[in-house]
Structures are given as structure tokens and as C-alpha cells.
Image (cartoon, rainbow, N blue to C red; front, side, top):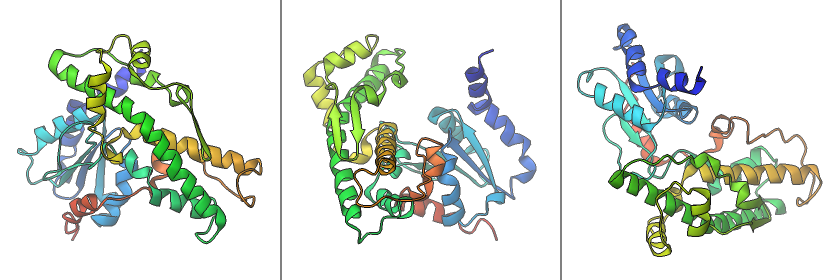
Length: 301
């Protein structure tokens, strides 16, 4: 029995549509929301807060990826015009914008909202108990920003390569590439006070890791890399993996009485356990998302 296949079948567009239709008696009473995978963990509390819709008035549907959410959006937007509904997807490397009932992240994905300076400041304060007037605060903040800049200067080439692969697949057809095989700890040793680059990300390295992928030369890779002129365009999953590694290192350094001026008691944070939920309260809420949700504030009378 292929468990993953069954899960995908249960969360594809047709299966979710069937569930949606079964709830037709709630069409004028509830808000129907459709998400990629586990993204409801980020959006749920924000729908409640900015759209002012209580959780019990929301029907959540988790779909097996962006493509399935967009299929449902197409299936439902005209025939079910009077049903209150929202759809949420990541922009990824696509050229998409938000429209009526459909919210598209301004950067690559919701994970990018988690890996910001403001989010890090909140974690320092609330999880590590470090006040903004403490010397450790500025030390951590400066080191975090420096490590992130160093990390992004390297990972940008991998983003350029991924964008190239997506472009070639559109032009020439699909090749199977398991991107999950590439672990960041194979390329970096990430800590708050030092980033060690184990291997350079270049065309030779990428060809060894992904021999089945479309080949690219250095000139083409540089061209595609230039597309990523803003941090929020970088692939969110890599950004979040970096962030988790930084937080783990800080927790370990505190445990070993290293790095910090004082030992910090009662740090209960575990960034690897359900990070979309556990770090959600610290993640940014962009103005475009607030504006999208404000339009639904009169849904509940």
C-alpha cells in the first residue's frame, strides 16, 4: 500500500471538491478556505484576526500542492460565485499576482515570512528572554544578519539553477528531480557566529547531485541567478532550514554556556517540531495579506 499516494489522492482537487459539495448546506453560513499542504498553520490565525472570522466559522481544506488549489479556484470561482471562499498559494518561481478570492504570496512562499529580522527579534525576546537593551541582543542580531547575508550569497546560485530547471521543463518536458535529496548540511555548517561552506554551489556540483537534470553552463546560471534581486524571492524552504539551524545552534550554545553573556533559563523552543505552527506567531504578516483579508471582515454579521 502506497501511503503517500493515498494521501495525495485524498487531497487532490477532485477529492476536495467532493468534500466541498457535501457541505452545500453551509454555503451561505461558513467561510471556505483552501490551502497548499500545511499552510493553514500560518494563515489560520491571521484569517481570524484580520478578517475577523471566528475559527468555528471557517471550513479548512488542505490540498496536495499549489496546482490542486489553483484547479479548485478555477472549478469554483464562477459556478459558486455566491459562496464565501478564499484560496491561498505560494508564488514560487511563477509570475502570479493576487486576485479576487485568490491570495498569492509576494515572495517565494510563506516560509519567507518566518525568516526576517523582526521575527528573529521577537524570538530573542520571547523565547530566549533577551531584552533589546542587553548586549546579547545586538550581538545575536548582527550575527544573524551577517550569517543570512553569507548564506544567501551562496544559496542564490541554487535558486538560479532551480529556476532554470523549471523554465526548461515548461519548454521541453518534465524530468524527475528529487530536490529533497539535497540537504543543506551537505553544503554548509550553519551556526550563529560562523558559516562554513563545505562545497561551492556551481555547475559541476549540481551536475553530480542531479545527473538527470537539464544541463546548464556557468553563463546561463549567472543569467538566471540575477533574477533573484530580493531576498523574499529565494526559495522559502531553504530559508527556513537556515533559520532552524541558527536557532538550534543558539539553543545548544546556551546549553553549553557558550556565546551568550549569561545563561538563559527555560528555553523551550524546538524549531524542528512543526515549525509552521511553533514559529507562526513570530512570522511576518505582509500588508498585502492584511488588505486581502480585510475585504472579508463583514462576512460574519
